[in-house]
Image (cartoon, rainbow, N blue to C red; front, side, top):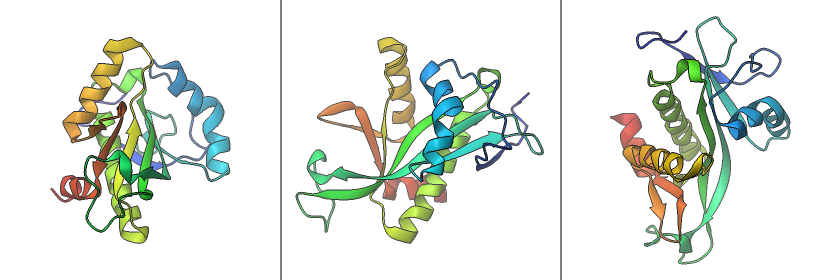
Length: 180
């Protein structure tokens, strides 16, 4: 299994090739998404699923999903320069990040987040993107929610004033992480 010195490969998920049958991150909603919904959502161009595997292997150790989205500029405390004070601005939405229990504790979730940031830079350079946006899951109660929220805050995500579960990080911040 994954160790601290082991390199993983992150690649776009291919349902016929990547083995999701034993994936268990400890959160039913994330397990079920990968096992039952991800294939259709990716096929229908609603999301892209990226998986972490060991080189030459097919068993999924972790995954993340991203898709294009928008947020209303009025949700921000201060609109970005050049943006209208109303209306939608483009974002990359991070739907899920999950790591199998057998691979947890070795930094794989941080590696997956860095991959999200790299993809956000590619999207931002190609079509424009103001921020990466996510909703912190509440599954597992208040303590689990707080742990997840704190983890995202360590990367630099900040909550919306109107909704503490919705968080964002500007592309300026994302690029500093990727370049640094």
